[in-house]
Image (tube, rainbow, N blue to C red; front, side, top):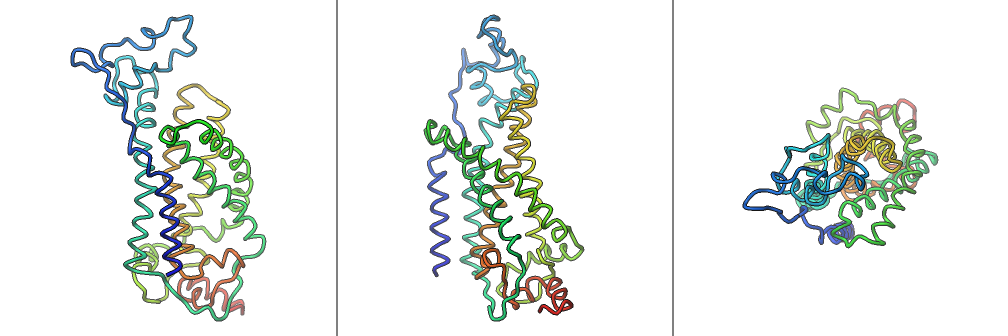
Length: 321
């Protein structure tokens, strides 16, 4: 019951963060004589005089508003300008909102219908070293901060902008500098254990046994197939986020390059946030005491024997189990 209450508190916090955000941008529809403004204007040239024009590939305010409500295909489109304006300004906010609210709701349903898996925690076996634990948390803490501050920036206009968003931007940059080296160390540390195996397909076929309370043997190594997916999303996906973020921060490219980086950053960000919520649920709520393994490095023998059968067999060969 305490875990369920904790889950509701965390979910309520997530709702509070995005509850005030609109599902999508709602720009006004500029028109004249029944026609969309994008059909009438001649591009930035009609809005800004040549001597004032810093970059002819940027769009003016009326064009941006027209693109958001009208779509792609303006007669004066240049590069990725229109698709960037349409997707970045209209759809990403909706997709992030769906993820931040929808994924926790799905797991709330799982928790209420299936419940928490419980195992006897008699004999404890060390599965993670002090180095493993240190690297994990040194990567995990800034990773979570990156996701939270990224969401603040995504919904910055709905949160009032100003000091809060600027603070989130600064924390985002600092957290990136911390995550990058420890994310690389984590990649090297757990690469071997996270390589795909044939039995991972069987794990996916039965959804890791999480759809029932039956404690039957599950085909998995030290990390199950779901944990392996999270590993690749967190490390390679995290690397993509660091690289695209750095290119945007230092503006190391042409305007279309920066637009592409922003699009990739947001697409990968959606996946990362969804998987982070999944990882937190699995570690804190899905299995009783599962979080302890990455706090003290130990896991109950029964839990290993049932949820990580191939790894348990290896431990028995080594005389550890």
